[in-house]
Image (cartoon, rainbow, N blue to C red):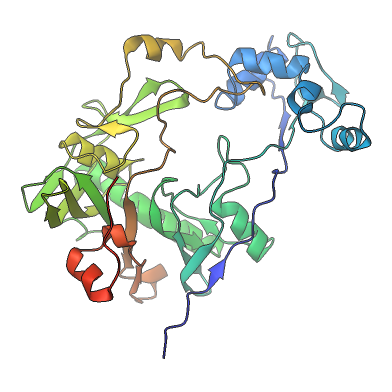
Length: 399
């Protein structure tokens, strides 16, 4: 009898998303000689540079942005624009002067036209669920929460579509290019406790109050599988390199890198298999802390960046960044829509590397004394060679 396929959720993405709306009320502290352009740039710096916000406020680009899709005098274009118009309103009045002064209590609304987001997977396997949580197998290429170009094509959107108003919410993040287990809470209590589980290990690392073996003092254990470049000669490596933030073109909040001035981080790497012919090493990684891109940075720091990683190189630093490019980030060029132009350099959300959240274990689930262990099936390229041969799977070639 063949095994039943895993239960799935996921609806196909529409061609265009729903656009974007920011709604704000100006506080007394914000209103002191603050212009509308300064307000939006200060609050939504990750959306657009200052010159981009000025362009959006002046609003001379709606027809220009869509004249290739619609004829300007067509009924279809008129209906489209009447439904979704790119504008900023202050107390119900459209504002086109970026130097308009705001006053306390003013209500601001910004509408952005719908756009086509990059191609993204939409199906997620359900690995486990009960009344409190659901564990999903996130595919590589799907972002967890809205941000940047991905405002609709996210795990959160699929949860909203498939479960309705009282939908589960993710309690941690995985990088867009990382696949594997994503835990989502169905109740407020579960969200509070699960979020605390993930945060606890990071705080323990920061305080130095940590057991000798990774995972011994944690309320949650996370094990990843990764494919590292080069041959890791040691059977086991413990990495405690701090991770900090530096300015980086196209990343408004800065890029996480290996930094002596960063926050404490802890990863334990165990070699599973060495492939000297292809010059790569299959590893298991257990993380105690949960810094952004921690495994990518830590393996790169010891000289073994993930195979296919477009961003991090040996030392845990980004590829090809020079001081001139970083300085230019303070006055970046902006795209046709006023937002940040896609940088020539790789950014954290770029995919291509092989990293999979393989196992999660919670010894005392929500104080019920129930042991929960979730395992996400491994993609073939992250399976050991004997397991691949045992299953009769084709061997994987590394490009």
